[in-house]
Figure 1 (cartoon, one colour):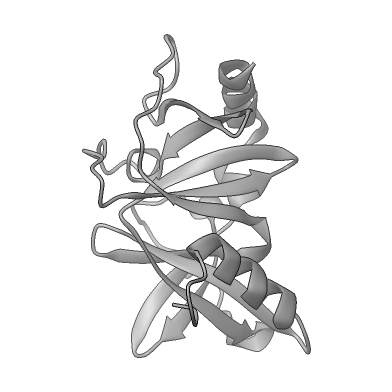
Figure 2: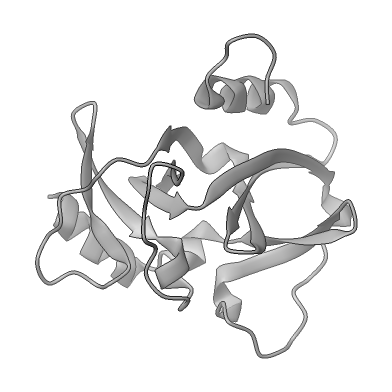
Length: 172
């Protein structure tokens, strides 16, 4: 990923600081199963390996539990489950992307982080109007990278006010 001994989080911050010019946008891409997704790099706060969470009662199935991240209680969401693809059997090979969404910190459980993508705004294509597994309101666009498609997610739509309220109750 980065040069030297940078951690993934340091690399993300370095790249984000150096490349927000001229209509270029950056995204962190990741895999869930065979599908490639990406989120805006400016929402990413940290990338860390999977560690067990503390489950809380009466939460939606896609909220795995909470994690204590240096004194901050962070709810962890299983994106595979959120997309209706079943629960992830999390292992040490899985990754949690810590993001800030609407002034809330949360973790996204994904299979693996793939890359940091820099694209110009005009390379982002609209989502076609069709039936799909991931609900349309979660998607913000599609980009082509090396002849494959990467689906851009809207974190704000993925975590609606109701979802964030449930997560906030979990973290309180």
